View 1 (cartoon, helix red, strand yellow):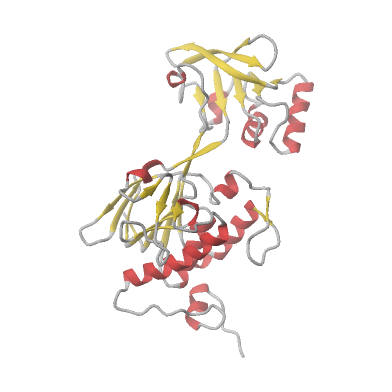
View 2 (tube, rainbow, N blue to C red):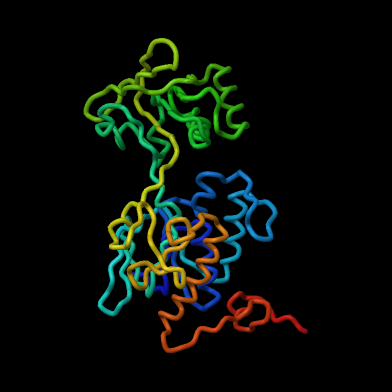
Length: 344
């Protein structure tokens, strides 16, 4: 059991900045995220695309913003629990919270902040008949162990960075790879596309563009072939032992929808004083919350995280007044940040 002041659900920009704001107030946080790296949408959807509306930063990429936020929270020793989904949030008799993840990891906290962006990201499934028979057996949405594809006839579906990265990673261990992309142009990094095209030119793999999978054949969960339907012309059947599907990620509220919060479609209603949900002690910041005038901007989420931190501090220490102290002049803030006092 991990004891902490606050459990933060979501390691996107707002979740990371929430750590910082809590840390300035002397509160310890632990972050849980279903994605295997911090950054949320910034790293999953636009790691290399420019962001222009972060205050005082004329331009940065999603990855650069994430790296800067991680650097900023280093003084506070936040625990980071990635690749895990929060499944249980339950109020204890003493008004603290019991939190448990999909891996069985357990926390006790005095508050919970939901900073889940637009929800947990789940792989977009392939839509063909009887796909459930093959999923997680010979049709996969992520690679857990590359060795399972050694010596196999492998079909990879998709045209983004994940699809191309795994083509390049697995081409030397699979018996044969066929890459199938529904469009003519790829969305992956140009360098990866060029390397893939060279592999095709060298006869080391196959590629089919402007086509999609229309059926998967096999029995007892084992794929034997996949039917590919081009935009024009007749369908063709390709032998396959394993299929990897990389159609991107779709946001879903997931277990959050079962926590008894006041849900507004796929968002959580909060007040604008504390950014507290309908459950006292549970807060929501960033894209996942809703209130009149809400704007889904990172800078708005940063503002929400700051006010939520003060509210959480007041909840944890109700008999003390929470004073605003400035990082420019406050010795307490300097101590928490690990910076030396500047002589005037």
